[in-house]
Image (tube, rainbow, N blue to C red; front, side):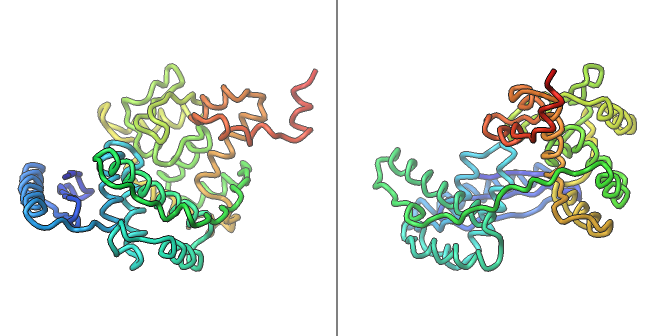
Length: 327
């Protein structure tokens, strides 16, 4: 399967993935050149795979196939491809997919825990397990032998407790003061709306409905949704949209990763807690609306959560918060 995307430089990058072959990538000046190269290479590689003795794919090749077939068009595809590459670089995952053992998975877990935190390893293990589970379903659907999931025999590391830091207004002001103007605007918008960084940087002028105090999130983590806006959020968006040209214009020309990098540098420059991260803006807004007395259904409209369990943690307010709601 081939995918095309425009690079920040204006060139077009083509990626070709065929099961049993290593992924290929190349950049071209035009979309037509990239598509022609990708189509020809895909035909060639599929022909080779058909004529030659089948090659046992590695875990990474199976993971990329999963990304292409199950996540195509979804916002999570890019992150899943990146995660596949991180895991697939480890020597333990270079053996044939079907020959991986619980000992391999456990060795990987042990090695990773020496480099990154338990939450990261937990998430990687869940992803590894998902690929085996998907491959097993595909094999059975094709009438082939079932694939044993080696992750079933390896206990997952316990993730750390979610961060509960609520960012105070004075901390937010210090953070924004240490940020470049555009990122500062994105951060304040995150504080006002509980939107994820990826949702904010994808916003286009046509997604704004400021007369109704709403905006549309398209292809977000939880799909499409409408976001209710505070009056301050409306003012912020009006100022940004005023400098854009046309409904297709993107409000913020920056990547999610660059936003997080800027926030990390700014909090250190400002001498703020390491717990102040972009995602804590979302947690902070959830806490604010919970303290206002919003019920769980109303909170889910604000945050975009689809699982009520995700917002239940915000309903456990202290006694002082509840007293304010009583007659």
